[in-house]
Image (cartoon, rainbow, N blue to C red; front, side, top):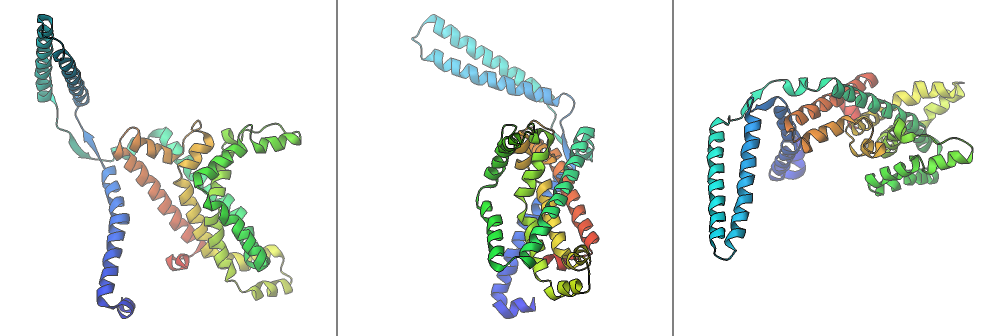
Length: 349
């Protein structure tokens, strides 16, 4: 605080703190609290309340249709038939209004009931999808680490500056393309009649159902979020004093021992950040699993959340599902911090 005051003065410091508070409360804490609060209640409409409401809406729709019929009848030339038809429509509308009034006396005012119902109704099938999503996201994280660690080490310690720049450009430039287009590109590559199976066919290998087996999801996930694993590891490995590696090599240490005892311990903060970012993006991804399975395979948990919010319009259950996924991500963050023995300050670096 004292540094802010010295740097910007009291007035500008107050404005900075105010805007920061509005941002944190309005964009981060506030929406999360609203979601949590919604997840712990549901609307109790009574046993027949839903049926009664549907009946009332149906009668109102009938009245609207009759009103249009009446307008059409009024446009006709005056005649006894016209007057009889208008009178019949008016009588029907009056009858509908009487029915609506009677139904509204039986309509129950919805009650807001707090309980754990939105969590307990998750059921066995949805719980299995949740567990599958978490395990698959962990697998994506492990695959991304195996792919990205050698790449980050090569760029940071082995490649010349020019080659390192070329490799980094090769990683960054594809990200100028929209994520959906990149995922659709992998869909065409891994499709049953796609490029990958065409190349396998040239060497006599039968076509492989990459998409139906779920392999395409893992490949597209790793590709979509590879930068979030490469850059944190690269940033920490780059700060490692190369003389430590050279000294270990001079003392006869094999390569795997150099990585286990020197490089990996130094890169722990970057590995932790990369794993956290990749896992959270994978667990929260909607487009990648949906596109790569073409909506035919068992859904990702995020697809269930989307369906609850935007298809069944059950925001309370959707909030419960979303909060469950958030808790799983938070637990994973603390597990990574505990596993790599790093703190918030280490991750922030």
